Length: 167
Image (cartoon, rainbow, N blue to C red; front, top):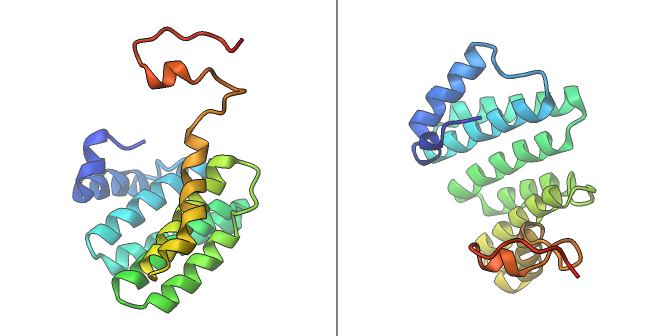
């Protein structure tokens, strides 16, 4: 949705995202709007733009309610939690992270569960609980790795090797 250059430059990402939002180009599909609003919220965090962050969290909450999209509502909570951590409000950030993660921890999609695990991993680490974070940190990276019964692992390790189906 966003040009690759926007990922490294929050200001460029905000310009692109704002053009989509202001031009009513954010599609009706929940995932499309969710992605745009989440990206803009993260850019606002990186620029310490509280107004932009609040707007995107509210848009995510609204989209989540309108489309029954728990992930959108979780993203809104994660954005608010991150800002609270930045402001030194660790306990409030922790509570917001726990509430947001609880919305998606039991989702069927392993990628969505990985988002919850990653946020919990970060939250535990930010609160000085690195040992407690380990299971969530490990779970956050699992969906990215194909399992042996789905794919043959060798081609993933050797990009030049031709793909061979599992025996």
